[in-house]
Amino acid sequence: MEQHGRVEIRFRLNAMSRPAGPPAVETELPAAGRLPRVTQVLALAIQFQDMIRLGEARDYADLARLGGLTRERVSQIVKLVWLAPDIQIEILHLPPVSNGHFLIRERAMRAISDQLVWAEQRELWAKLKQTSHLS
Image 1 (tube, rainbow, N blue to C red):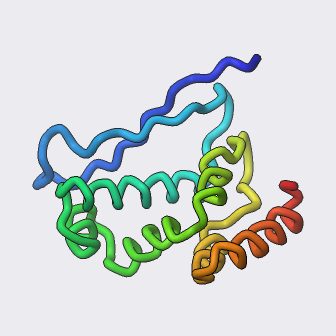
Image 2 (image 1 turned 180 degrees about the horizontal axis):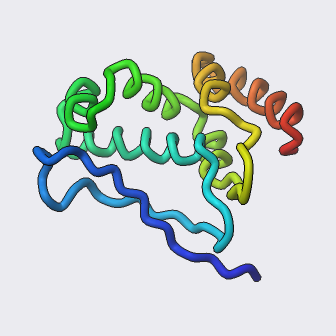
């Protein structure tokens, strides 16, 4: 079986944040390559939701202020948590890339998350995987 290393993803707020920072999100990552951008952004969206749930941030506007992001960008990021849970799991387990860009873009995933019916999301996700040669 392949050896896996541990990667710790931390979202460090600005100097006004509490010293310890938010809890880290840990994931398994093969030794070579980097996680696709869409995987990183989805992990961040999940962490944003947790920060609000735990009271570390009041709302998305608070996250934007603390993180030095625009409210629009925070909304774009958090939109990924609207994806069906099985799609989120697939995105979080996409293989790392060693060079170039990954074929699945964040923008395409946000377009899929616009569909509020998970069955429709799954159809669009299947088509995207097929055209991206992930299936």
